[in-house]
Amino acid sequence: MLFRSSPYETPFFPIANDHDPFGMAQPNMQTAAIHGLYQLLLGRDASDDEFTAIRDKLRSNTSIGVLVETMLKSDEYHGKVVEQIYADVLGRGPSAAETQWWRQEMKAGRASSEDVFAQIIASPENFASHPTPESIVDQVIGTLLDRQPNSTEAYRWNTALRYGAPAEIVVESATQSDEFHARLATGFADAFLGRNASADEVQQWVAQMRQQPPEQVLGSIADSSEYYQRANAGTAGQYAGDLANLGSNSLVGDLGLSISYATAGPPTAAAPAPAPAPAGVLGDSSSG
Image (cartoon, rainbow, N blue to C red; front, side):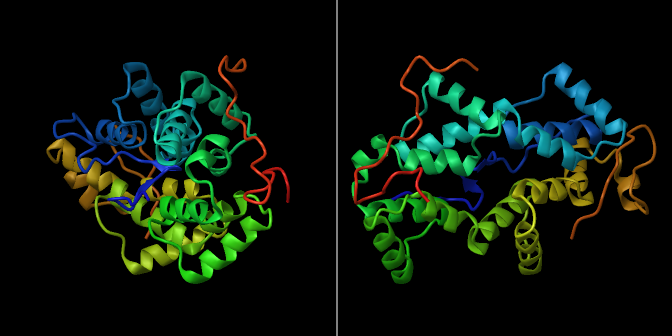
């Protein structure tokens, strides 16, 4: 069973494990903030054209939070999610055709990260190595919640799967839980703020995730003054005076940053869409 070493290692948010995403010699805080976004979300530096486009958006008062949500919807980020799900569930990387197929489904709004995960869980390839309800429940709970199912969960979900319920119901139950949202919140703070979230912060962010997508919560964390303060550490403190005297929702000077506050064709290979699982184990994934 897969257990994770870090709280933000979830297949739906493969945020880079980098506690120095901003570098140490950026020319200004804006450059450091943009560098951090690309390192954390995409694991690479921005190209010159990408940097210019992001800088111009920031100077036109587009918030960092909006940019984060946009990057999370990009083909490149979707590809990272697909790669992580395949690694977590099947223990291999997706083929180019599989990646392209899923990216198209996600871009068109026909599949979310949770849908991709649930369908790969219910695939014949995964069933070959997890042929029983017990092994499926262990896999889902272990991957998403980083623990073994308790006795109540094991009885409930093993019984449901044996009577033909689809694996999606286990995935949905886990991903809509406060426990899963708390793991996301802890991971978001660790990655973007470089620290542990307080109990009050986790409670606040979990409450927000009951009403809005986690992507919006991550956006608000990235849009906080604390994220900019952390980015400032990579600039040898050129703008420490501005940060120390923040008294409104925007930085003055040449940055123009708006800061808010927060406590394709079908694949040639076999399509990875799920086939009905063997009767009496997972059931048809299209059933209710």
